[in-house]
Length: 106
Ligand code: SF4
Ligand code: F3S
Image (tube, rainbow, N blue to C red):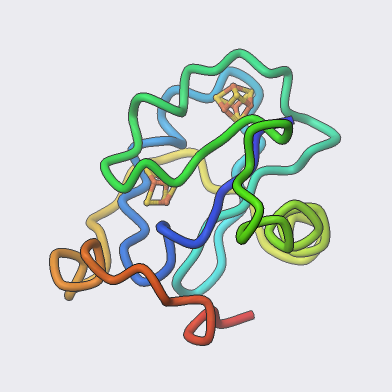
């Protein structure tokens, strides 16, 4: 499955949801996750993300490994999102920030 990683936090551009053929994105307050049980590995979402937050599970960086379990866990709790919406208000500032996981709202 594909995995949303730290770079999405506090940006949440949502371009990714529009291309997903199986509607497997789920939305939280300031982050999106992919349901690994639904993702069909089509790769379409990867190029859509302005934050370059989405990776194949096998390509997730060493310091992002916790996001594999977080996507699986939070996808069970958060609602599906299928339509793009405006990004979060300070997305430009947060796009440049690399250390954001402490701000993840669950
Ligand atoms: Fe959806 Fe394809 Fe991205 Fe998986 S890889 S989340 S199926 S767009
Ligand atoms: Fe997040 Fe990128 Fe989608 S910032 S909401 S994974 S387009």
